[in-house]
Image 1 (tube, helix red, strand yellow):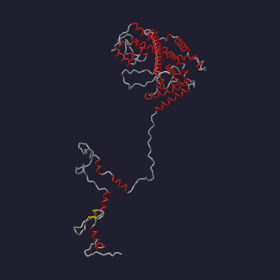
Image 2: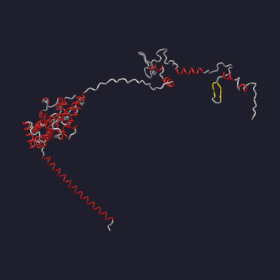
Image 3: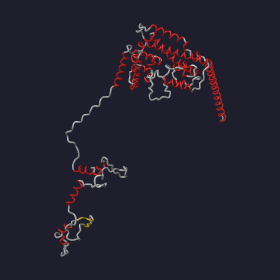
Image 4: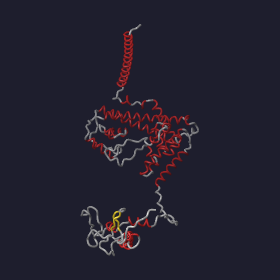
Length: 485
């Protein structure tokens, strides 16, 4: 039978074996990662960033050459309507358009790579230029125009950049810390600029070809935004199917450039919009409604692209209906609001209204009515300063109190009708000691029930001569004896 110490030793042996296995696996993974890193470093070292051909390879590919040759031939030949009855996927021209859309995206990526190459080389000469000019093609044109010139006042940048950006570039160039480039580096930079501009020209040719075929490929989208804008949207999105899968908020931003305000105010900067600002609908819309019109235009364009991607309406009637709907909405937005109609008075109610009346209501109204003193305090006499509780217009103002009369702030308060009626009723009752024969008689009587009580001594005098009091309190009266029965 194994002892407790033997079982502990066996557990320790298993743990050591597991640790050895895990260490071997970790070492194998580390060697594999080191091999991958070494392979990546070899690829990076093999890629020479000083050579433009090793960075940009698109123009030398056979696919690029074949597509550009087909596009040029198609532009010279014109549109072929003999294939209009074919299925869209089987049409070779449609396949060429799909290839053109893919190629336009590749050209865009290639231009970005060349832009990074130019920026890395020209950073030694003018490091601030990349933060002032963001668009790759504009940057390449400016670099090619400036070259190795240090004084930008001798370089004419009109037509390449807006006047505000030109001014900022000139001022920044006068204080830059850059130095002139060597001749070999400058030549490589100029060659890269030429290649970027050549790729941009090829992209324009591709878009022109796609534009001529948009009436057949995307008739509904072309009916809304036009053939040129539809071709640019398809080229930027990467094809009609990719454009159909895109949400409307992203379609609105296709082709939008990053704006450089160069320190100017953002109050007048326009909202971000891409190729849709080139449409006829957007251009004819008033400035106050352009943002709303752009959103509607993007949503309808997305619906039209989805119809075209499924060949739902090859005639383009749906696109024309969408366009009419957009125009009607914009016209509806521009209509003035309806005039406010005068509200007629309600028909008078002939039935008597249920209002409380009577003596109690009159008393309540009289009790809470505004007094003459308060009326005078609420009024002000024109041209006469009012007196106040603290003086100099501070505190509570007294209005016209005391201004007409004796000059005092108090006035005699007239007795109200209710108080007059109560006083009249009280007067009708004769109270007091008038007509008393003796000065010792008083109208106050002390009773065990109510204490001090007002009485009429004359009434008591009339009653003394009759009744039981005359015998009980008389001077000649005696006690009477009552027999028990």
